[in-house]
Length: 249
Image (cartoon, rainbow, N blue to C red; front, side, top):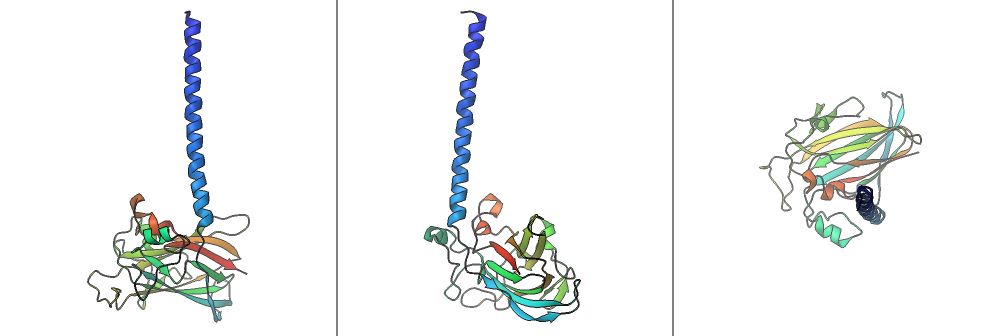
Protein backbone atom coordinates (compact mmCIF):
# COMPACT_ATOMS: atom_id res chain seq x y z
CA UNK A 1 0.00 0.00 0.00
CA UNK A 2 1.41 3.36 -1.01
CA UNK A 3 1.84 6.34 1.28
CA UNK A 4 -0.97 8.21 -0.47
CA UNK A 5 -3.39 5.34 0.20
CA UNK A 6 -2.33 5.19 3.88
CA UNK A 7 -2.88 8.93 4.30
CA UNK A 8 -6.21 8.65 2.49
CA UNK A 9 -7.47 5.90 4.84
CA UNK A 10 -6.23 7.84 7.86
CA UNK A 11 -8.00 10.98 6.69
CA UNK A 12 -11.27 9.12 6.15
CA UNK A 13 -11.03 7.63 9.65
CA UNK A 14 -10.39 11.06 11.20
CA UNK A 15 -13.35 12.57 9.34
CA UNK A 16 -15.60 9.70 10.45
CA UNK A 17 -14.55 10.13 14.09
CA UNK A 18 -15.15 13.88 13.83
CA UNK A 19 -18.61 13.39 12.34
CA UNK A 20 -19.57 10.84 15.00
CA UNK A 21 -18.33 13.14 17.78
CA UNK A 22 -20.08 16.15 16.26
CA UNK A 23 -23.35 14.25 15.92
CA UNK A 24 -23.08 13.05 19.52
CA UNK A 25 -22.52 16.60 20.78
CA UNK A 26 -25.47 17.88 18.75
CA UNK A 27 -27.67 15.13 20.14
CA UNK A 28 -26.60 16.02 23.68
CA UNK A 29 -27.33 19.69 23.10
CA UNK A 30 -30.74 18.81 21.67
CA UNK A 31 -31.59 16.66 24.71
CA UNK A 32 -30.52 19.37 27.19
CA UNK A 33 -32.38 22.05 25.24
CA UNK A 34 -35.45 19.86 25.05
CA UNK A 35 -35.43 19.26 28.80
CA UNK A 36 -34.98 22.98 29.44
CA UNK A 37 -37.88 23.88 27.14
CA UNK A 38 -40.06 21.18 28.71
CA UNK A 39 -39.30 22.37 32.23
CA UNK A 40 -39.86 26.00 31.28
CA UNK A 41 -43.16 25.22 29.61
CA UNK A 42 -44.54 23.18 32.49
CA UNK A 43 -43.29 25.49 35.24
CA UNK A 44 -46.21 27.81 35.81
CA UNK A 45 -45.73 30.58 38.32
CA UNK A 46 -48.21 31.06 41.18
CA UNK A 47 -51.01 33.60 40.99
CA UNK A 48 -49.77 37.18 41.07
CA UNK A 49 -49.83 39.46 44.08
CA UNK A 50 -50.58 43.03 43.10
CA UNK A 51 -49.28 46.18 44.78
CA UNK A 52 -52.01 48.08 46.64
CA UNK A 53 -52.52 51.77 45.72
CA UNK A 54 -51.71 54.08 48.63
CA UNK A 55 -52.14 57.72 47.65
CA UNK A 56 -49.30 59.74 46.13
CA UNK A 57 -45.76 60.75 46.99
CA UNK A 58 -44.51 64.22 46.16
CA UNK A 59 -40.78 64.18 46.89
CA UNK A 60 -39.37 61.86 44.17
CA UNK A 61 -36.84 62.32 41.34
CA UNK A 62 -39.82 62.42 38.96
CA UNK A 63 -41.94 64.75 41.07
CA UNK A 64 -45.37 63.73 42.31
CA UNK A 65 -46.10 60.07 41.61
CA UNK A 66 -48.71 57.46 42.58
CA UNK A 67 -47.69 55.31 45.56
CA UNK A 68 -48.36 51.60 46.10
CA UNK A 69 -47.35 49.06 48.72
CA UNK A 70 -46.55 45.35 48.75
CA UNK A 71 -45.57 42.84 51.46
CA UNK A 72 -43.62 39.57 51.26
CA UNK A 73 -42.42 37.09 53.87
CA UNK A 74 -39.52 34.64 53.70
CA UNK A 75 -39.85 31.31 55.51
CA UNK A 76 -37.12 28.69 56.09
CA UNK A 77 -39.61 25.88 55.44
CA UNK A 78 -43.32 25.17 55.33
CA UNK A 79 -45.34 24.24 58.39
CA UNK A 80 -48.88 23.51 59.54
CA UNK A 81 -49.62 27.25 59.56
CA UNK A 82 -47.65 28.17 56.42
CA UNK A 83 -48.22 25.75 53.51
CA UNK A 84 -45.53 25.31 50.82
CA UNK A 85 -45.85 27.02 47.44
CA UNK A 86 -48.14 25.34 44.94
CA UNK A 87 -46.25 23.75 42.05
CA UNK A 88 -47.57 21.88 38.99
CA UNK A 89 -45.48 18.83 39.85
CA UNK A 90 -45.95 16.73 42.99
CA UNK A 91 -42.40 15.44 42.51
CA UNK A 92 -41.10 19.02 42.51
CA UNK A 93 -43.05 19.85 45.66
CA UNK A 94 -41.68 16.78 47.45
CA UNK A 95 -38.14 17.47 46.20
CA UNK A 96 -38.27 21.01 47.59
CA UNK A 97 -39.92 20.01 50.86
CA UNK A 98 -38.21 21.72 53.78
CA UNK A 99 -36.62 24.39 51.59
CA UNK A 100 -37.00 28.19 52.02
CA UNK A 101 -39.53 30.18 50.02
CA UNK A 102 -41.14 33.59 49.56
CA UNK A 103 -44.79 33.97 50.54
CA UNK A 104 -47.55 34.55 49.44
CA UNK A 105 -46.27 34.50 45.84
CA UNK A 106 -43.22 35.03 43.65
CA UNK A 107 -45.28 36.46 40.78
CA UNK A 108 -45.42 40.19 41.43
CA UNK A 109 -47.17 43.07 39.70
CA UNK A 110 -46.53 46.75 40.40
CA UNK A 111 -47.76 49.89 38.60
CA UNK A 112 -45.55 51.74 36.12
CA UNK A 113 -44.13 55.20 36.84
CA UNK A 114 -44.95 54.90 40.51
CA UNK A 115 -43.32 54.85 43.92
CA UNK A 116 -43.37 51.34 45.40
CA UNK A 117 -42.82 50.55 49.07
CA UNK A 118 -42.08 46.89 49.77
CA UNK A 119 -41.99 45.37 53.24
CA UNK A 120 -40.19 42.08 53.87
CA UNK A 121 -40.60 39.91 56.96
CA UNK A 122 -37.66 37.50 57.16
CA UNK A 123 -37.98 34.34 59.31
CA UNK A 124 -34.94 32.39 58.09
CA UNK A 125 -31.36 32.11 59.30
CA UNK A 126 -28.43 32.90 57.01
CA UNK A 127 -24.70 33.44 57.00
CA UNK A 128 -21.96 34.42 54.57
CA UNK A 129 -22.99 35.63 51.13
CA UNK A 130 -20.42 34.88 48.40
CA UNK A 131 -20.55 38.27 46.70
CA UNK A 132 -20.53 41.31 49.04
CA UNK A 133 -22.15 43.38 46.28
CA UNK A 134 -25.46 41.71 47.09
CA UNK A 135 -25.13 42.62 50.76
CA UNK A 136 -25.63 46.27 49.75
CA UNK A 137 -28.81 48.14 48.81
CA UNK A 138 -29.10 48.97 45.10
CA UNK A 139 -31.91 50.71 43.23
CA UNK A 140 -33.87 52.22 46.12
CA UNK A 141 -35.19 55.77 46.15
CA UNK A 142 -32.34 57.10 48.32
CA UNK A 143 -29.85 54.22 48.36
CA UNK A 144 -31.06 52.96 51.73
CA UNK A 145 -33.56 50.58 53.33
CA UNK A 146 -35.12 50.46 56.79
CA UNK A 147 -34.08 47.48 58.91
CA UNK A 148 -36.07 47.05 62.13
CA UNK A 149 -36.68 50.80 62.17
CA UNK A 150 -33.07 51.79 61.41
CA UNK A 151 -31.95 53.32 58.11
CA UNK A 152 -29.02 51.39 56.55
CA UNK A 153 -27.25 51.12 53.19
CA UNK A 154 -26.60 47.42 53.48
CA UNK A 155 -25.57 44.53 55.70
CA UNK A 156 -22.33 42.89 56.73
CA UNK A 157 -21.34 40.07 54.39
CA UNK A 158 -21.86 37.47 57.14
CA UNK A 159 -25.31 38.60 58.32
CA UNK A 160 -27.37 38.05 55.16
CA UNK A 161 -30.33 35.69 55.16
CA UNK A 162 -31.66 36.18 51.61
CA UNK A 163 -31.88 38.83 48.91
CA UNK A 164 -34.66 40.10 46.69
CA UNK A 165 -32.92 40.95 43.43
CA UNK A 166 -34.82 42.25 40.39
CA UNK A 167 -32.91 42.50 37.12
CA UNK A 168 -33.10 42.67 33.36
CA UNK A 169 -30.86 44.13 30.66
CA UNK A 170 -31.89 47.15 28.65
CA UNK A 171 -33.95 46.05 25.65
CA UNK A 172 -35.58 47.80 22.73
CA UNK A 173 -38.99 46.98 24.20
CA UNK A 174 -38.29 48.06 27.78
CA UNK A 175 -35.78 49.89 29.93
CA UNK A 176 -33.26 48.23 32.23
CA UNK A 177 -34.09 47.68 35.89
CA UNK A 178 -32.01 46.57 38.85
CA UNK A 179 -33.06 46.38 42.48
CA UNK A 180 -31.25 44.55 45.26
CA UNK A 181 -32.64 44.23 48.78
CA UNK A 182 -30.44 42.30 51.25
CA UNK A 183 -32.50 40.68 53.99
CA UNK A 184 -30.81 40.13 57.37
CA UNK A 185 -30.52 36.73 58.98
CA UNK A 186 -32.10 35.69 62.26
CA UNK A 187 -29.68 34.45 64.89
CA UNK A 188 -29.53 30.75 65.66
CA UNK A 189 -30.59 31.34 69.29
CA UNK A 190 -33.63 33.48 68.37
CA UNK A 191 -36.77 32.62 70.32
CA UNK A 192 -39.19 30.67 68.11
CA UNK A 193 -42.88 29.80 68.06
CA UNK A 194 -44.48 26.34 67.83
CA UNK A 195 -43.69 26.17 64.09
CA UNK A 196 -40.03 27.01 64.63
CA UNK A 197 -40.24 30.56 63.24
CA UNK A 198 -38.61 33.47 65.12
CA UNK A 199 -41.05 35.32 67.36
CA UNK A 200 -39.36 38.62 66.43
CA UNK A 201 -38.37 38.22 62.76
CA UNK A 202 -36.31 40.72 60.79
CA UNK A 203 -38.31 43.45 59.05
CA UNK A 204 -37.05 45.42 56.05
CA UNK A 205 -38.79 48.19 54.15
CA UNK A 206 -37.54 49.67 50.89
CA UNK A 207 -38.93 52.31 48.53
CA UNK A 208 -38.11 52.62 44.82
CA UNK A 209 -39.50 54.16 41.64
CA UNK A 210 -40.68 52.16 38.63
CA UNK A 211 -40.35 53.24 35.01
CA UNK A 212 -42.48 52.32 32.02
CA UNK A 213 -44.19 48.94 31.68
CA UNK A 214 -41.96 45.87 31.34
CA UNK A 215 -41.43 42.27 32.39
CA UNK A 216 -38.49 41.48 34.67
CA UNK A 217 -37.23 38.52 36.67
CA UNK A 218 -36.07 38.31 40.26
CA UNK A 219 -34.29 35.80 42.43
CA UNK A 220 -32.44 35.36 45.71
CA UNK A 221 -28.66 35.75 45.50
CA UNK A 222 -27.90 34.11 48.83
CA UNK A 223 -26.80 30.45 48.43
CA UNK A 224 -29.75 28.86 50.22
CA UNK A 225 -30.45 25.90 47.93
CA UNK A 226 -28.59 22.72 47.09
CA UNK A 227 -26.13 21.47 44.45
CA UNK A 228 -24.18 23.86 42.19
CA UNK A 229 -22.66 25.73 45.15
CA UNK A 230 -26.12 25.80 46.77
CA UNK A 231 -27.72 27.67 43.89
CA UNK A 232 -30.01 24.88 42.72
CA UNK A 233 -33.36 23.60 43.99
CA UNK A 234 -35.52 26.45 45.33
CA UNK A 235 -33.05 29.05 44.06
CA UNK A 236 -34.03 28.38 40.45
CA UNK A 237 -37.69 27.49 40.96
CA UNK A 238 -40.54 29.91 40.43
CA UNK A 239 -42.83 29.93 43.43
CA UNK A 240 -39.93 29.40 45.85
CA UNK A 241 -36.90 31.73 45.64
CA UNK A 242 -37.35 33.15 42.12
CA UNK A 243 -40.15 34.65 40.07
CA UNK A 244 -41.33 37.41 37.80
CA UNK A 245 -41.64 41.13 38.48
CA UNK A 246 -44.06 42.80 36.09
CA UNK A 247 -44.40 46.55 35.80
CA UNK A 248 -47.85 47.25 34.34
CA UNK A 249 -49.25 50.41 32.78
